[in-house]
Structures are given as C-alpha cells and as structure tokens.
Length: 109
Length: 125
Image 1 (spheres, rainbow over the protein chains, first blue to last red):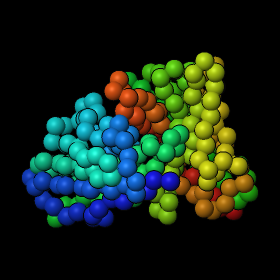
Image 2 (tube, rainbow over the protein chains, first blue to last red):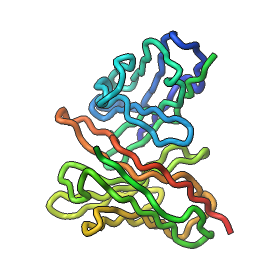
Image 3 (cartoon, rainbow over the protein chains, first blue to last red):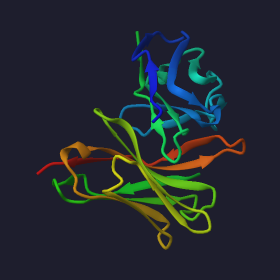
Image 4 (cartoon, rainbow over the protein chains, first blue to last red):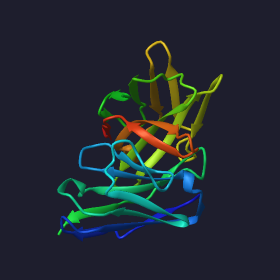
C-alpha cells in the first residue's frame, strides 16, 4: 500500500505570499495518478490539479503542481483570502483503490 | 455540469446497516468513461476510499480491503443513481460519506472530479 505523507501539517502565511505544499509517497507514483484537492469547512473536496501538473477546469493559474516519482509539490503563487483551506494529495497507483494524504492546513497568519 | 445529490439517514444504530443513495445528473451511471465511488472522511481515518461501481460492457465493482466483507455498491439505471450499503456498523464507521465521480483525462490521468455534498452518518445507539 502506498502511503502519502504531506508536509507541513499546518502552514501559516499572509495573503499575497507564496505557499509551497509537499506530498511524499512511500514508493514511486506515476505522475498520471497524482492529484491535489482543496477542501473548505463543511464542503466536499474540490479538484485542483490532476496528472501532477494539469489544472482542473476553472482553477486559477495561481495554482500549479509539479514533481515526479515520490516527491510532488503544490504551489500557490499569491495567496488570496479564499485560498485558506485544507489541501490533500491523492494517488491512484494502487489501483483499483486510491489513497489520500493526511492534509495540509493553510491558515492565515 | 455533473451534479451528485446524496440522501440517507444521519443516524444508524450499531450492528445495523448504513444505506446511502447518490442521484446523478449531467452524466449516466452507465457511462463507459466514469466510475462511481463512495469515499468517507473522519478525523481518525482521514479521507478513505470505500469502493466503486462502473460499466464497461458489463457491471464491475471494486471495494477497499478494509470494508470488503461488509460493503455493497449497487447501480440503479432506471433512476440514474448508485447506492452504498455498509453492514454491521460500529461507532468507528461514524464519518462524513461522499459519493464521487472518477474519470480519466485524454492523457490517461485519473481524478475524482465531482463530489456529492457529503452526509454525516453517526453510529450510535
């Protein structure tokens, strides 16, 4: 079973700053099978990035994904107030199942 | 625009069966390019995939090892919906349950692109 570990657990930043979130896999993951989601309180997760680096429909270009193998990164270039939320990475390599990281909470400093 | 609308009870007694339904609009449960999933979320277990149903000339189901002996996901083509049944529940099954659509991009990249609104199910007597 592939385990995804996200860091940091909590990231405290101010609007306008750049956020860098990490997702590390316990073994190599195909880039096609790595996605990122944003979740706000009381809501379902929302797809941001798929295939490690492709933005989902309607997602701002402030969001970008990168990485390969075991190390993946979500970058938010200039934080807006609506970006403060919890972010999850997800992998499909252990098909048919998928697994999620434990999440990074992005909070306002 | 795909929409998933969940329904079902928010309180289930221990040892009983948890049942939830997800009505699909904007797509078909019989789609040859989608899979229909149930995912739950709790503070102790995080986001946990439970299983899926999908149609590729015939119906298939896959289930998570952790719940395989207790879970059934069933499509209903007449109502364009799919359902979750989880038997013999315990307080550890208390969670927010989501239905969700899995699909694949032209590049082959896989993703969960649409989610239901979530249903908090509490297992308690």
